[in-house]
Every structure is written in C-alpha cells, then in structure tokens.
Length: 269
Image (cartoon, rainbow, N blue to C red; front, side):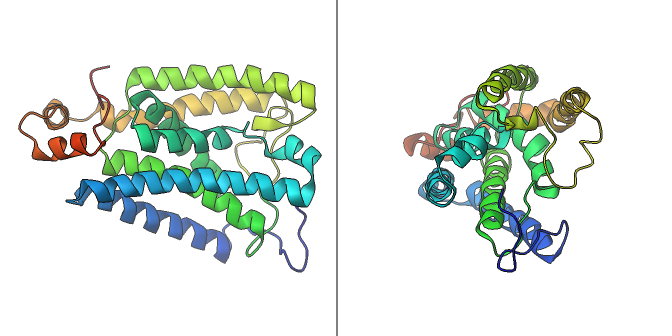
C-alpha cells in the first residue's frame, strides 16, 4: 500500500472526498438501475450491463499493469492478486452482468452488500484524493455494488435461501484455500493473518477470533439481506414469476430476443 506524501495526501475517513465518493456511488447506481428497469430499449439495457462488465474487467487489467510497472512483480504477488473477496467479486459481477446467471448473482449480491459496502464505509486505503489508489479503490468497489443494484432494481433478480447458504459455504471454502495460499506466499489475502489497515469497527478482536466474529457477522448480514425478499407477498412473487416466464409479456419477448432473458429469478426456495 502506498504511503501518504505531499502529492498523495492521507485518506480521511468520512472526509469530503470519502463522502463525495459515497454520494457518487448512490447517484450512479440509481441512474443506471432505473435506466435498465424502465428503458423501453432492450439494446440500451444490454449496453449498460455489458458496458459495466467491460469497465470492471478493463479496470482490473489496468491496475495489474500499473502495479507491476510501478511497484514490481513481488509487490503485485504480495498485495494485488484477486484473492480478496472484493477482488473475486469484480470478476463474478462482470460475469453476472453478461450471463444473468442466478447463482452467480446470489454470490455477488451477498458478498457485495454484506462485505463490499463495509469496504466502502471503512476503506483499507492510506492515500486520499487525488491519488491513483484512491480512485482505483473506490471505482472498483463502487462498480461491484452498482452491478448488484442493476441486477436487483433493474433486472429484478432476487436471491434465494439456498443461494444464501451456498454463498456462506463458498466463503468458508475460500478461507481455507486462500489461507493455504497465504502460507505459501507469506501474504495476508482476505485479512486472514492480520486485520486490514484503517479504522474499522469490525476488527476489534485479536487473531483468530476476529475471523470467527466476521463469519458470524456475515451470516447475520446475509439473512438480513435475504429477509426483505422472503417477506414479499406471494402475489408479488407470482406476478414477478409470470412476468419473467413470458406469459403474455411483450417485454420478456423483447428481452429474450436481445439476449437479456434472466435465468429463473427468485423461484421457490
């Protein structure tokens, strides 16, 4: 992580630059989600989904090149491999926006709203605006959240209970896989060896207890994120299901023709 300097001022949590980044996230997510939801042009909806997916992938590729060029391969292997949950979520979000796969959506839904939002509010970044790392951090994390918002509010995709449990099990599988990689490379991916830098109220315990606390907290957050859809009236769920199976719905016909047909969103658990 780059240290602050006169040209790269120290990051201030909830300072003007941090708040501006959060406001920009809300505005952009709202505009794109509502455009996808209410646009009469399937092509426009497709361009937004594909465009954001391309932006996510291009931004990651640029960051790899930038990091290797400015910090070297060793630094890249130590800090920039896509082994944090948010880093993996970048690729899954891009894939979800292109394919509309239900299970992939559920993974990024719980990870992004349960974890990436914490990263936005308590970022592990030392340099503030206008440093490269500041822009890279907030653009990458914000794009993941925006992609999930487009899926939920624009494409009307819905998480299932079995998707919740799958995501939680996958998260624990990653703990063991990434933990092994940390041992081999002497790294700290997923913050399994040490808590992240910065001010976070979620890392007040010592190792390894903060990992168990994070796991329990994640499960609680996952259920809270699933609960609004579980409490939906059955009539609303039935209406949504009929709309997305093409029974008399001209919008579904257009979506299918243009490659935007969803894969069984929010069926019975």
